[in-house]
Image (cartoon, helix red, strand yellow):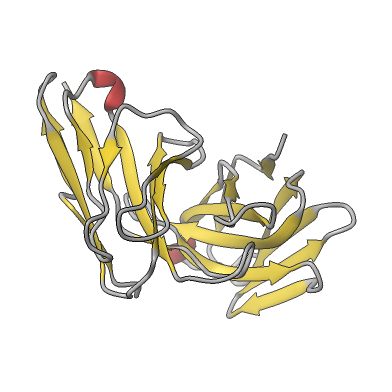
Length: 114
Length: 116
């Protein structure tokens, strides 16, 4: 069964600190992995996308890593800001369907305190 | 910011009412999707469309129906709303491409539906 598991479920950090969010997946055949940021009451917004051949991708203070052998990914946030408070969702796409089906994790709820 | 719109943003209605959630995109995308998301849970695909006059059911069974008469418009309808339909509904779209390509799905802001 294709699944995406994220940890931790929730995380509280102080402004300016770094944090790392984890994602494990069993989706096969693998196409790509994306990290989305979802603010409360809003739709998800893409942060990074990585294919099988990529093992790291940065977008400003966000850096995602991918280990396709162990089927693990992480999202590292440096120098956190209050605006980083949101749910971060790991999404894996398969290449076994014409739709390019997406499999969503439940997200990590990040809260940044001043 | 992605040009995909959903209305209304919030809707509170009584049981038995018929409702239509609107979704429009101005990016000319062929593929459109409806997801259902409960608090703290993952998004579940309930409907999708490859293009005009194409609609398919997603992974999660839903009593809602959709139509795709125009490329830019993908409304979702509930003929008789029930409290179990209370949820957030997210619309998304993506461009055409090959199987499993990198076409990003752009999401609308969502409609928070509450059925009393």
